[in-house]
Length: 236
Image (cartoon, rainbow, N blue to C red; front, side, top):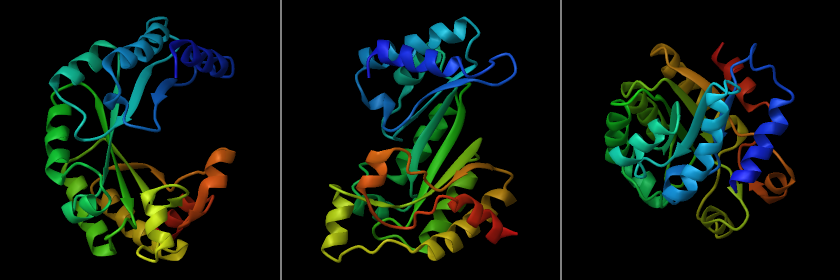
């Protein structure tokens, strides 16, 4: 994405939002933002910062990996007006992280959280259930470890299989079987209860297949358009 494209998207949505009545944020999601070059990061962040200084948006949030954040990166993000950082934790079990080739460890998560807490960012942690080598016991362990890290909010996603991924290859070979909707709902309901007990806000449960590309590339797994609703009803 270019700065011009980012500016166009922001302008498009600002026309539909009253920024005086609503909290408006620019979000850089869909990848590990701080893993891209610093020049490209700043090119995009400067666009968001411009609108923040004008008072048209109130915050800037991004997602990244636990092993793609350090003091120099955090300092730059703070100077560029970033207000929230989400880390794609996925699991706190090293064997699961290794089997899914995440490229980071549970200890990397702990270190990243400790570092981010030294800055005035809000912190969100994302976890995923039903990964390769995962099971409900490991998911519950991950949720408890995440709760102990006391993030400001959490997202819970069920693992889905998409075309042209290593998970897809494992699925085709019969080496990996994703959770059913029922299994995923049952597990996520238990995780939601854990976070509720620790007064941690869960702002999202489940993925939304937005756009034709996502829908066309979806192969298997516990997808349901109202997955979060199913989970929350299961907790009642």
